[in-house]
Image 1: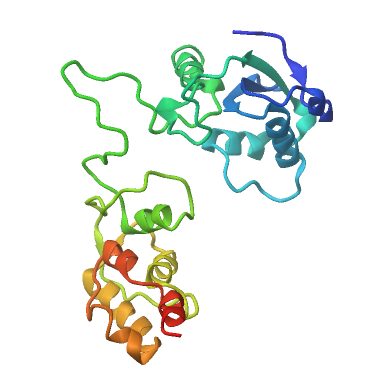
Image 2: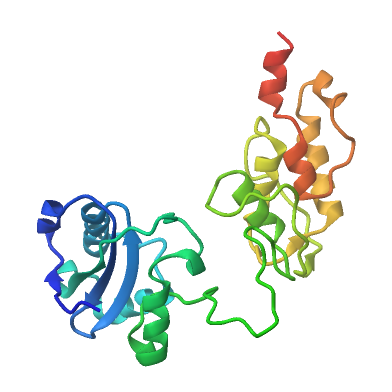
Length: 253
């Protein structure tokens, strides 16, 4: 692995805008973060903005957030190094952890210097028992996926596999009543997703709660629209299959 570290400054804009597997190093602690990108100078500039910004970063690994809490966020404390410039043929910037080029570097750090690793290794496969067949890409695990995450992925709120149906989920059921958190003129899938974002989000709403919210939403839709949709919706999948009221209204003209 390369050991040529360069201060993380705005001079990175002079770098060639192409793929790179890179490492960031926090010089006071020597802690490291590994990443890959199709545009190295842009990605490093993003890190500079994050490190020097006054607002708290929204999405950073847990260990990096802890480091910020102790040492603060100052781009001047960081250096970077280019580990590899050879772009893998199947490279995808938003691929799962197991399919990203930095996986090997993260595993090496986990084995040799785990206390200095800033990446979040959660979800990273570290080996497979003999005789176990790997799951197909996009197939869900035994615990499935919660309705709120499923809706978020299907609505494009964040990245993830877009399954054709909702995978089963073993999370506990929350008996609470879902309350509207958005105007009535949005698709019911969006209406349901925003209602479920009100804590506690780690529980699944009951089928009765979903249908109760659906009836509130349905009562606010145009009269003719009600005749074209089911009288009961109890799942996130059912919410996604409902037509968009605004699209339906345009079709009537």
